[in-house]
Length: 480
Image: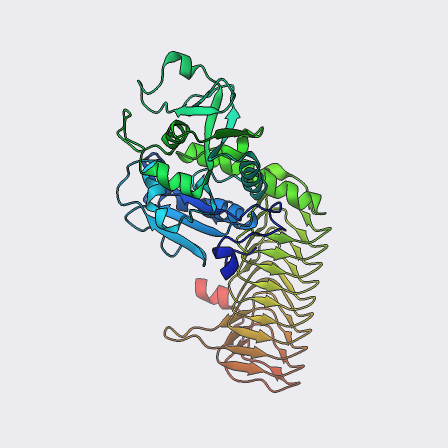
């Protein structure tokens, strides 16, 4: 589901959806914790707004929740409301006024929790969680009949994670935090099963437990896992849902973690494209953002970066060393060693090497932008060629036109931009400058070295240069 596609009214109410869950499973409310200060990032940008493969960190669990069929999604942010304007339509923002722990953060979202619906709690700084895992957790929670189900994993090195203490019957007794010395005993620190920070609760049970947890720990915070022994003390069942891929629960605390998580996310993106029929010659040197679309039999050469909302059709050849940002490529387009931003290339167009296509550039079918060519806010007609060493800005170029080397459209007079119109089948001589606003008719020709300041009629030859004069014996007389 696209990020800007709001959930239907029925899904906001948490109705049952057979296509997302087994019969009898209510679509959950998903609460995503994003109020952490992220001081270890050492950044003016909030931690959860740092991008991972073209998507802010906080939106990764949002997308997973939506794709898993969440009935309602609530993101808990800090009092600075830094996340306002960053969340897609239909996602609600709750505010934790003071940083008093994960339990207090969930309590900030209590007004959005339906007592009759299950609640899944995710963390914005655990971005690799996917829809399949969220859906499996919801289904396991419903099948167990438990008041709470927590996701756990077994790690060879569990340092920094809360340890899962099991009861004799295998259910979860409690989670012991290990953030500060003294929170856990040596025996508890030896436990390898850890809390992944992802939970499912019965809505009513969660709301009740949130009112009864206490900040009896070294940091004086309300920990969400402390709701588990509260539930057990009331006779409720608490179970674990063990996952075997710890990458899904990798957390981000600093930029080292961010790089590690991005590496895993990037590998998954590239694998998805390759399995869909895209050739990526060297994945280790290729960057593709999460929302990029690539058609079958397209080849991505080494050193390429496809960012943002870039899309490429089928049988394209991109690279080596090409950067595409929010670019749109139709089928059978070739881009070699060039930089493209917010431009469109129609079927069969070719670009590069060393070309720069800026926002608003349109190359129609079979058009060419060659070596060291810059094009901005211009429409290059079907089959037209700008072969090399040229700047074309704010211009309309007709089909089958050929502009010679060192063509320049002088489009700016210091105050306003002006447009150049060049017709179809025009032959522009090398080193021609078109001083806008100016128009060149169909089938016209411009002489090499011309500065065209007046319109050239269709079929005419435009010559705008000084007549050559040779001064004989110039050097001898100068030295005399």
